[in-house]
Length: 206
Image (cartoon, rainbow, N blue to C red; front, side):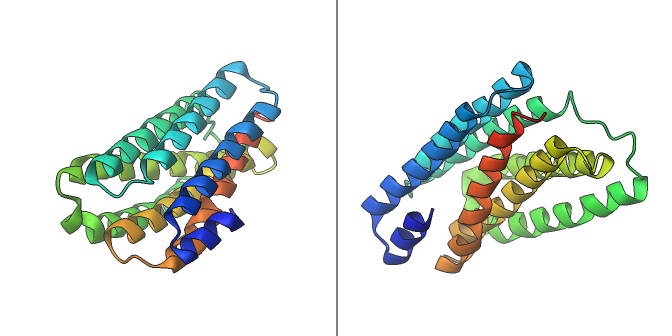
């Protein structure tokens, strides 16, 4: 990841392609090193990581077709993460006020990002809106599950993982559609790769 940040700073397309692909292969490899405690959950997470790797490769391109393919791959990855979490999420201990408190910043941040990106999305507007809706719902479900089971390591891993994934996608949206800046990469890339490694590790706990 440090190599990726360096190549981004130097604006080196070949270095970015190599370091990004390697960084993404590493979170996929990490998942394979963690034995799945629940084969069903483990398979969903592994599928999500594979699709995330595909999305990373697609987003190396700058064309709208490449961006659209990247959004599609990550949308599919989040569907896999939802398939992993939804049957196992237990919100019985969640207070309604806390649930609302968790939802408000997610919806606000996603709405602001979508509104700022909207003028440049064009035909990608509908998929992007669906993506942010799913992303916000998934992050909320993961954080709410963690809030209901604060001492459960698996709940913490997936809550932190999907929470950081949400943060990283805000950085991507800002860089792609609002204001290109290396500062977006400084916080977005670490959030993304830490998120994926946490989700990979959650296979051993959930």
